[in-house]
Every structure is written in C-alpha cells, then in structure tokens.
Length: 117
Image (tube, rainbow, N blue to C red; front, side, top):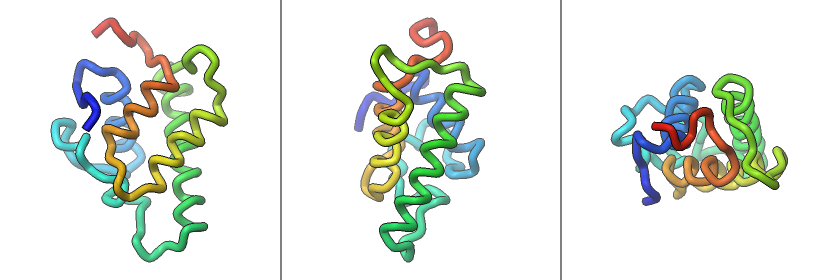
C-alpha cells in the first residue's frame, strides 16, 4: 500500500472528499486499505458501461471538490482530462484501494498548503 499518512495532504483530502460525497464512512486510519469495490458507487451487478459511467462521474466530482472547494491546483504539465482519466481508471478497478486513489491525486494535484503540514 502506498504511504497512507495524515501528514500527506492528498491522503487527507481524498479521504475527506470521499466521506463528503458519501462514498466512504471509515475513519482515516483504516480508510487507505478500502478497495474501490467497497465504495458506495460500486455495485457488483453493474455492467462495465455503468461502472465506467459511475467512475467518470465520481472522478469529475473529486476533481471539482479538489479544485473548487479545497483549493488544489494541477501539478505542472497536468491537464484536467488526464487527472480525471487517471482517477477514473482507479475507481473502475474494484481491487485498487483508497490509498492508490490518493497516490494518483498526489501525482496530479498540488493541494492547498501541501508540504506545510
């Protein structure tokens, strides 16, 4: 599992945003290991098209909250479409975990006061 830490702004922001969006209810310490298949949006009976659509919607919501609410900016050279697509790819894979989603977020976004914790 990638470095899941309260000292990492991407981890805290990913966790809190998933909670705000009612996708996850676990406390921070155990949330990193939660797989995408355990998020509220995930339904094992959905076909691939539906799973893809839900993952896209959630990745757009994450992007909006990261940027418009939490003050994140894209890392140098990162485009919104690429950041959303990378999060979508994680969200579609029921074996990936929240820490992996936070790692993708960390690669694509510079979060408010990142590095100042």
